[in-house]
Image 1 (cartoon, rainbow, N blue to C red):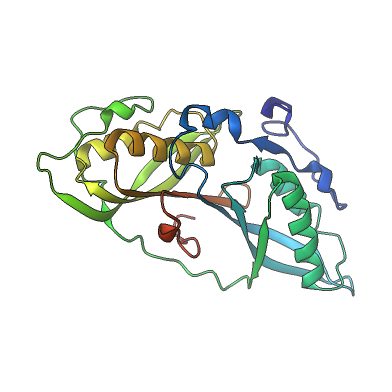
Image 2: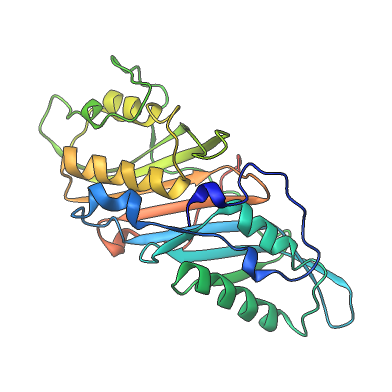
Length: 271
């Protein structure tokens, strides 16, 4: 089913009854056609934070929590975000005998849509701490060349041939929803081991996504593939912490080596 047939960009009634059929899977394969041979394109996780998570306990009293979803990059499908928002809204007036029953229900529904094992962790509404970004910030670099659309040719090596292991980040990531055109904002982290990249060119490449239409997960995979193919690092991680929209934030991460996969997502102030 094409994404044009989804609920994105359409006026929608918010369900008040449990409605798992509203979940809309999107196949990952079409956007990966050009990256089929890239090591790590299917290694990693998509972490989601669900802030509009509420249900009724066995006595009919409202409960609330923050949900953390983990969806593996190996899953055949990602889940379209508006359908996920509406799915969680459909739980608002549904009774569950225990949080274990709630978790089991959500995991079963999302795993069916993704065709892979999706996990849900419940966090207290006040327990999600804010992290500080780690690494070298690229945002004060001054690129000599800019592009209005992603251009892997922007990626260049530094003048010296030194081998480095470093994490870089930029708060200037912006891309657009491919259906509605709404802007998506985020911070991107690039952990890199290999021949030193030109930092100006790395920032220019990140900025080039500002008018690009792509889902969060697809943008991260394209970044990962372009850096991997053009700079040929020994090891690589690309992680994007996107800001919240519709009560959800999405944090896709791709790694060339699972040893570089974070144990859990970061949580930044803008999210």
